[in-house]
Image (tube, rainbow, N blue to C red):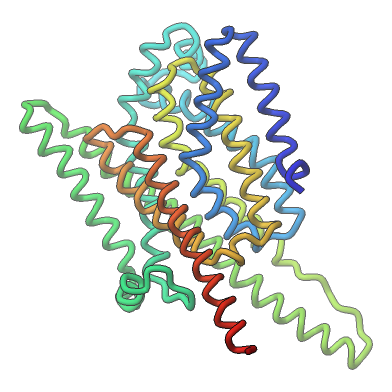
Length: 371
């Protein structure tokens, strides 16, 4: 099972590390290995959340996620995305941006760093909405009940998540402007960029998440209709028609997954510049890490891990909330990538430990009841 799920990841790792040695020797090998570990540690919560969505898809769409989805994640976000950032922020063509990335690595890194506020605002708002919508929803299973019960009651207020997210965005943009003024800088454009990018992140979440939710509901309705048709067919002997909406529902959930993965990858791409400004090594290291995140997602789905350890999804969403806050804070202040990775790992580890304790308690209660 492990080899079948992680086989491609192992193969890509071997190829990537060999390519790194040929490209830049053993030093490049070490950099690619470090970047791979960085990406995996920063994106473990991504895998848990992805698994919660992917388990609703059939085997065909899971395979699409592992093939086309990987191409988008590895080449799109880890290779093309930084180049696009440079092209837009420096107002140059994509070919010039690639030449800059290969021939003037210091200038390339500076341009990506300058674009960080808009990236952080977009990704931070998208992830913050995911977190807020999760904690404001009333769930049968609650992890931190003392916190989640009152938040679920508050969640009955319409559009509360969007209101809170917008307030956070306004504060973030005002902080950028206020600090710039204190230092005598003219950074009105930076505050405006943060505001616009954050609003675009919010719009993206609403559009993609809304479409995904709409078609998911349609799929459930169609499945109920199909079940009723099957029951009717048993009585009458008539053939049952296929469910047409399944494809659309799965497609929009796939689209939602890709936007979600893109938002998670922002911190990995930016954090990679703390280790290297070589775009080739960055693509190799982050690409290897992205493969493991994909494989881990499928592994969690096929093993039913989220059903066995019910608080894992909670921990992952709290990690998303922490990452959203960290991204928004990094608009103005620098935060070490190790802290970012550790916060997510600790929250997920805590939720896993809580799940294990819950399972043992339920097992003990079941044994007592039988006795």
